[in-house]
Length: 337
Ligand code: FO1
Image (cartoon, rainbow, N blue to C red; front, side, top):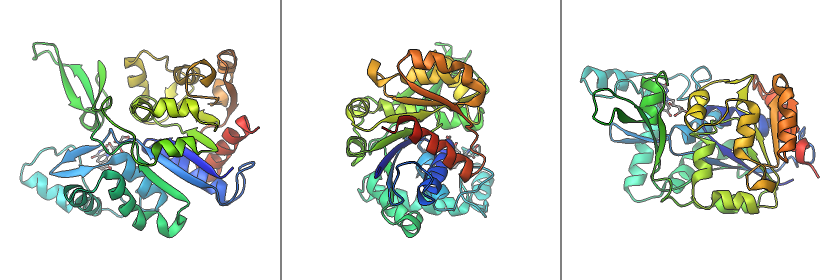
C-alpha cells in the first residue's frame, strides 16, 4: 500500500495523523510500505479573517502537530508561545478579544496573508509554509492540501430573542471559542461550500489512493464540510481504494470538541453507529467500506454490519502515537484484501 489519503479536521485529525505516520515509519501497519506517502485533505471552513489576517486553524493544527511546533496541551497554536500582540490588541480595545493569536502564530498568519494578497492560492501558500514545517522531517512523504482554494466558512445560527427572526448567525469560531458551544446550534450554515471547487490535487489524491481514512474528526464541521465540497463524494464513491473511518463518538459522547451538539443539529444519532450510518456504506450510496468503533460500543457492530459496513470494535483513545498507530493498523486490517 503506497498512497494513503486522509480527510482531516484539526486536533482529532492531527493526533490521528501522528499515529498513522508513526505506524508507517515503524512498519506496524499490515501491508503498508515504510515509504508510503500520506496526503492530508484538510478542512478550511473553520478559517477566519481576524485583525486583517487569514487564520486557518485546521491547516495550522495539522502543520504544527506534524512539524512538532504545536502546543500539546492546547492542541492548537505554538508551543513556547507568548501573547504580547494579543495583550496589546486588547489594550487598544480591539475586538475580538475572545480569539487569541500567539506571537509566534501571528508570523504564520502574516506570511499567509501576504502571499494570499500577492495572489497565491491557499494551496500554494500551504505548500510554502509546509516547506518549513513538514519537508525537513517527511520530505515528500506527507502533503497537506486545503480541501478548496475558495473561501468557505462555517457559520452557526443561534437563538437571539432580540432579533425579529429570533435567530442570529455567528462564525463557527465565535460559536466554539466565545460561546464554548454552550447554546444550541439551530443550524449549521457552510457559506460558500456549494460554490467551492476541490483544491489542486484533492480529487487525484482520492482517485489514486490505495487507502482513504476518515479520522475521528468532527463529522459535521470537519469531515462533513470536506464531503460537502462538490465532486468529493463522487470521487470517494469512485475510488478503487477502500475507505475506512474511525468513530469520533465513544460511549455516546465526543472525546473533545462539540460533535455532540452539532450532530443533534443535523439530526444524526450521537453514537458510534449513528455517525457510521450517517457516512453510510459505499455499497448503499455512502462513502465508507469500514468503520471502527471503540470497544465500549461493540454492541453497535450488528447495526453496522446490517448496513453493509465492515466494522470492528477496538480501543479508540489516542493516548499516544503507539495507541493511535494501533488504531490505524486496525483500520488497515479491516479492509485488507
Ligand atoms: N481556541 C480557543 O479555544 N481559543 C482561542 O483563542 C483560539 C485561538 C486560535 C488561534 C489560531 C488557531 O489556529 C486556533 C485557535 N483556536 C482557539 C482553536 C480553534 O478554535 C480550533 O482549532 C478549531 O477551529 C476547532 O477545531
